[in-house]
Image (cartoon, rainbow, N blue to C red; front, side):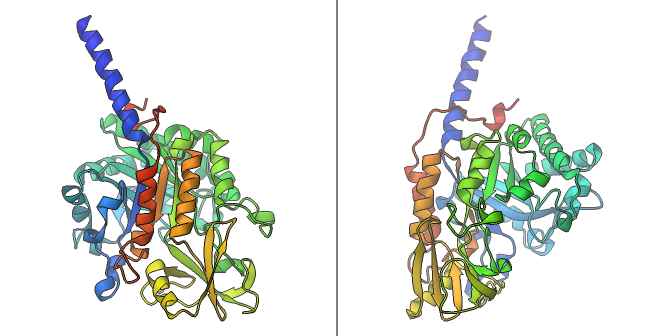
Length: 408
């Protein structure tokens, strides 16, 4: 009886410790395994990751081998030849507190490999086994799926993806249990309700995933024909029809009303801007008509996108007019026919307060290499540092969290 009582006491103690650990707010920082290719000093390396400012770091991206259903590198020249995976693992030597996540998927990966792999239990279990081997090899702590998007025909999706996505997450959960590991399973999800209806069994996913990473960025862009901020917090008068609920507040609400706990949701915020060329330079309000992307960044060189480190340099000439969309809690700036919506210290502070008020699990920042990481405009990582203040000031509660090691 004494042994049984001791076991119960230890179990209760461990659960209490797990509750305190899980109650700590998260700042998940995303590292991209292609940003090392920028020229000269702007080459962003794993060793540049500010592990002291993050609670978790996510390595993006790995892929799914469409032929074998196994996890694979999609940038072997860096991941393997330059030992990207090993250097990522070694971050724990410098930052013992840091939790490491690997992320599979992303935009360029496509949906077809996911759809094929998830279509049968046999292929899903092959995938899970390869994930377990990878996690053990590199001493990782979590695994995230970024399938963009299940059920979307234009992304090679099928109707069956919705159920198969749930089965995949559940198989990962059970695979991690069989391996006797406390690894977390995270799914990244959109705000778009049409996407959710087509490919996401929201309530079921909330039951089997440890965390839901909600992408609160790229909600607008040059593809829409109007110039607007892209990480809108709340709906505005000009957000009509399809865009009426296309904002962070409504996005979080739909997951809460479909069975997710607030402390299960991690909100994604960007540290880059979306650029536009105005149709009429005299009309520079959010929602003004645009003719396409704005000027590309010198180092990111991606139409319609600009890193904050590039944008803050542009602002130094003083010829930009900066304004604030108070409802969206996003700044924007314009000069001539050029327009950009982005995030700054003030907007991220306001969104952090909102996350705290909602009791969410934390924030993920996308991506580290878009902040002013070389400190050309002041202190290095000004936006990540602003988000780190959110971590420092977040009130810790004793609410019972569903920590992965105790998952049943």
